[in-house]
Image 1 (cartoon, rainbow, N blue to C red):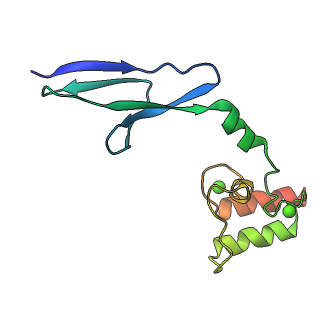
Image 2 (image 1 turned 135 degrees about the vertical axis):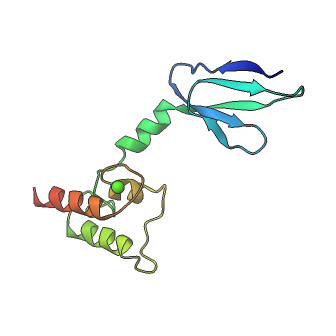
Image 3 (image 1 turned 180 degrees about the vertical axis):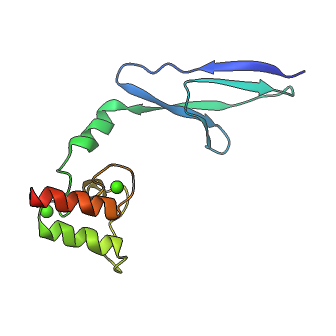
Length: 127
Ligand SMILES: [Ca+2]
Ligand SMILES: [Ca+2]
């Protein structure tokens, strides 16, 4: 007879709940802080609740300026060129994911650098 077990995670002040993870393979199984699992056989089940520090995420978000890919404090044609080279897959010119340059180039924060970001960067330079 399966029975349901509900896990509830409550983040402390300054933290965001990230998700429930399988202890053994570190795969996220739920984004929801309340996770109900159906237990079908007796045994041990291990799950981990992960939390993200809000102060850490906000530091990343406020560092630098959107569009300033080379970090010289200006958003101009140089940055546009860097982004173009990344989108066109120019060897050695790829912007590494997780870096400040990547964050600056990802104008709309969707985790990718593509034509949409190029358009937004052009707009920013022209205005
Ligand atoms: Ca720049
Ligand atoms: Ca983007």
